[in-house]
Length: 203
Image (cartoon, rainbow, N blue to C red; front, side, top):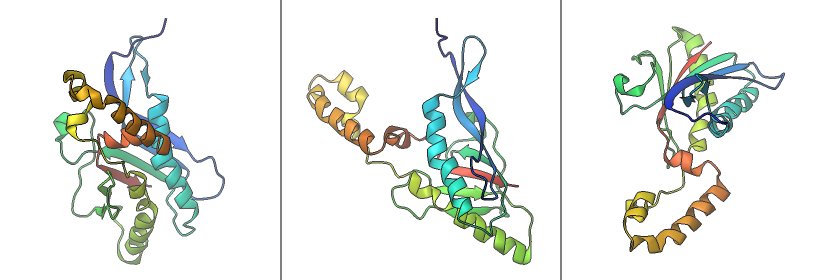
């Protein structure tokens, strides 16, 4: 008999580059939604793991191989919602200060709004090179989080369930959802994204 998930938790998952070329070898994600099963095991669903692998991890490994002067070998990435306090978050994130690099989204429609790169305390030419590599490596992530337009709240699943008249629109809504998922199987996950920023530590 399968175990029933009973508690939502946030986990850390690691990824190793499958390629031999490129300096970037390891990426760790923190704050990934998971569940503690009744047997005590903590798990991340395959769909969630695949979502982050496709949108963040594989893109960073790929981009790293295109940047021969980028010597980053290890990234630690926190999923971060800028609009909630630490007490509500459910997991710890580093404190952001003025020495850190802030990369703002340059892609309209992206659910990912900012990327904060923690200061490595470099100076002069080294810092300029570090900043240039960070921007080149992380900027392509913004386009990965473009989500299809959301339906008006009037046509949400909850509204349809509670209003017999609006239930007439249910087939129409289902067609839109199916079309979105055919184009992008992660469409709904992007629309309901629980973070709008990343905090990244480079080693």
